[in-house]
Length: 280
Image (cartoon, rainbow, N blue to C red; front, top):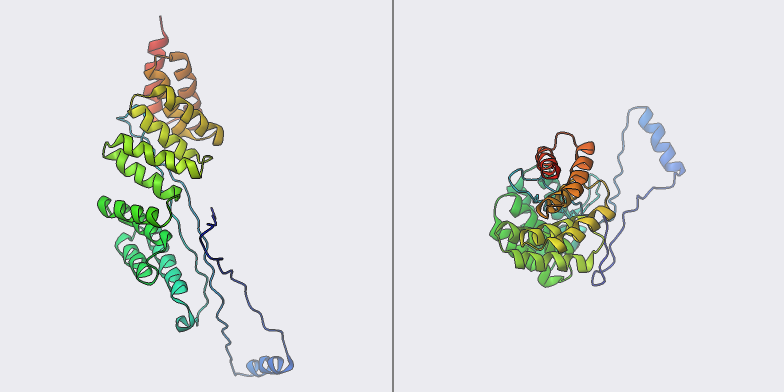
């Protein structure tokens, strides 16, 4: 999902350049037909775009309120052709190359190599909040939670309204049991992106963990309004109802979950509990 930022300079856009055919070129084509080959490579401009995808993790079977942290990945896309002369690129454009390579490696699960690429990007563009954020994602996937925390904080130092950094930092804190701090970051993420269903679900999760079910339920409900097929949020809503002994409402939510995902074990167990609670 592309997002422009006020403090960002305008991104360059890739336009394919095509040469207008001329008689010399046509003659050259004729020569190729009799055995000579010519190749012309025109280096394109740099294209950088900010994209983020929210991918909730699978619900935990041991937790009645599933932990569904999003780990959005912001990846810069660099389009180039064979023969591109990197000597003609600015440092910002070279940094974009490194970020693009990091994103591709991250998607392949090659975390150490991705980390190296993002660090190389930061040497050229140390104040690039996206590079810090991406490095944080890579470090988190590699198991370096403290390193990830530092990079998310750096991204937020540069761009305090960075919603993905707030969301991911909130998830780190949530998993460490620092619930109030996690709530603060989830709320900060929603200040910038109130229509993000994942952030709404995560806020509901931490509120439920804090015992604030009356606040958690509206958060889960809002997540479902924004994304009606959000299975994790619906399961969480059913679990919150179950904790409030609202058996009928819980049965409704768990049943809806299982219509979409029949093998969702936590919802199966939740439905059994809700039916048992509802029975006289």
